[in-house]
Image 1 (tube, rainbow, N blue to C red):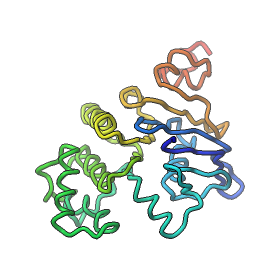
Image 2 (tube, rainbow, N blue to C red; image 1 turned 60 degrees about the vertical axis):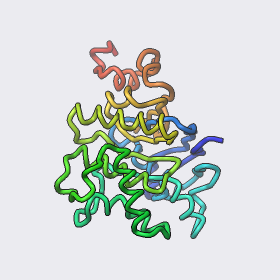
Image 3 (cartoon, helix red, strand yellow; image 1 turned 120 degrees about the vertical axis):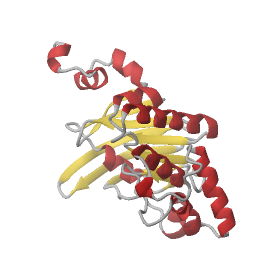
Image 4 (cartoon, rainbow, N blue to C red; image 1 turned 45 degrees about the vertical axis):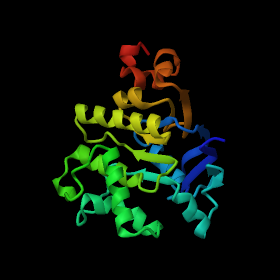
Length: 252
């Protein structure tokens, strides 16, 4: 069984269609990257996959369950099996790092405070933030905020983690360290990652497979390993993206 099946997904905002009839699968344990230029629909697709948007057509199956039609407790049960880390971290500034990580446990479990704290500390250790439990978000660097958000997303031991622009705003060294953390978590814990990004270095570092969305076609124009697309695609916009070349440099 695939971890995720996106079937004929279409999204409209009024009369404007932003994503038109796209389909793809995400396999268990892989790091799957959704990429493309600005306005191509990357974030729109992600918001459908985590249940924030309802599609105009199509559906999304996560571990055998349809998140697009689920309601009530059924929907909550699906959401408990996924974790989300947003671009800016979205930590609560009035709470410590540990309290932020414990939030999903307070919301969705009946665990006592000691158990919640133990799990929270374990998750922070997994992302290299042991010793930072009592710090406030304002005391953290950009990279530490991303790691804390990742720890919170892992609080309920989800099978799938969704990351929105994880490297955005980070310096090259911190970004590379975060890439390595994603790889370690994927390989070590078998977590499936769905990552939205346009950071080329990160794509080459972490992606097992990618899809590239295109603003003009409103669909998928390329799919596969990033190195293969870089070396073999004959589609000009794909060549430009993966080779960081202009039309003139490519002789188009």
